Length: 398
Image (cartoon, rainbow, N blue to C red; front, side, top):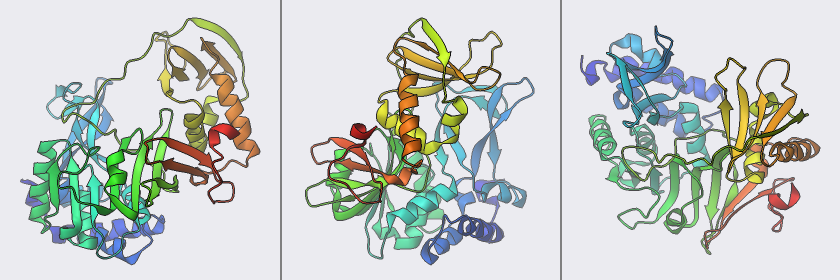
């Protein structure tokens, strides 16, 4: 069968069920976005995708899946991210329909998309720029809500842009799509009322603030190392983008400067083990508390958290590392209350942040503010009562 084998009419009950699920979860809160999700056929824009599984040889693989027949519709119209592309530099085919490798593009979790679109606060007549065209599903939702003449989208991958344009056209939408680095100025030079990014960036690019009209809104995923999150920022007359992390939590694949692959991160050689000591903060504490991980990203900049195994049959550990320094806490077993470290004792900073976070009442992520000033400097701060304090930066409090 071809990609168009399943008619849109057959999918409508599944589309309606997805809307009901997103409304029940609180991701969709407005009639307009409910109508948009009910109108856009995801299976036309995502006719094939990869699902993660372990094959018969015990290898974790991405299995190619097709939208063929009505039996596949329930799998498409669920609140799940559907991976649609793999990094060609890491992808290796292991059987007829499965590959290993790193995912580079996807159709995002619908509840995350809905939350971001609600946070965007669009109004009739708003011109919107989307960074990261991908499958075109998000662009289609914007078209359904605002009209195609007000929707612009950019993606670094020309093949994705071409495919999305064709599939969008097949369902009656013709937004302005371009192949471009979304972190740079949009090629037409237009200004926009809203910018939404479905890829993560280490900080808000200056081009986005410059292309947003004063009073306009940017919704994007800022990746800060250990953790990151969605911010909703209003751009003022001075070019500052000011706001906070949103209640909608989610992460996106990193923005790419190259259409084919991601830049590999170079890591310093790990320092030799220095000591092992008791700790009151376990790996489970870190894993279970997203706002706390965000706080760690503010406090321990340029660090990352990875999973570690020495290959000798030991239990898996959570490892915090930066510039060769590392701290490691077992995930399971009888030693989850012990931390081993090499170089600087990074875990002492985790413990200090844990004490602050608990003393502050365990604030959620939407109590952390974010600003990207016109000169490019970016800061975060704590909003104990939900308002913006006078330059009391979080780094001064923790």
